[in-house]
Image (cartoon, rainbow, N blue to C red; front, side, top):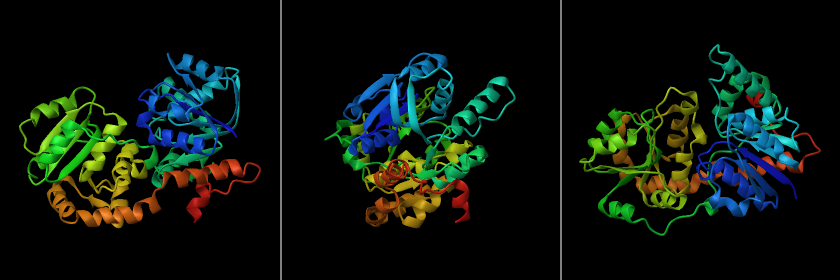
Length: 381
């Protein structure tokens, strides 16, 4: 079978990127060998990795480290814009590796990379553009994000692309048998609404918590972290609230999944001027995590999620001011929402099926024209 090189500079750790570890799972299931160079932890996924290389140091050093990896790879996959930059820079360092196809599995879109007049900003955009020109195939997580990507880099509209939502493969997700502090709270809560992840001001302005204080027939649990102490400050401010709880700190994947499996509803909030946030759509890992456990979601009405949630009956998508009525509706019709998810969700979003379709197009038809649409062709449909 073949060899795949995965390139992920982000130091957060592989467990934070379901699209990456699910890709490892799919290639491994097909009998391919996964090679990865990354800055973050990979402890939970060693069974899926044939060989691991490490990024360290500054930009130039990391580019040299990438160039130093020896061998031929059938597929090379870059994930973040910084990965694209490093790959482009590496081409000029007499790399010891070669590849047949370069794939960009697009997790973030550098919409602001061309802003500003500084030489560094212009150089960055030029490197990104140069790196993107090397791409043979593009994976996007949502069609509206495809629009955003191709509007940012219009010269790439002829690149074949594949839609692979940021959903989960449940067999790869461990679930803890119990979690004492959570179980105690669960016992005390008639209806538990859970948020997990980064607790930042851009997603959770203080006015949101003032609204939640008035919804006494539900408990709102915020489990996560923040930069600059924002989450800790909120926890202190609302420590006397009877219906708002905080548990600060990152959780292991098994603990995270246990909380999701035992909550009633997932809270998915995005409130930011950043286009990557506004157009999050089906790239939202939080959305998919709750739906993968057949849990309805409550969102703050973000437009890129509103139709998907409301049209399919997966939860409530309303302005924050309407959260009280939305929580009541979620409680009253909880079984109906759960049944909607059970019947419809995996037919709409299935990472393994979507990714295997990409693999078939890229690998099994290597000597034929790719049977996928370019952006321009899709717009004509």
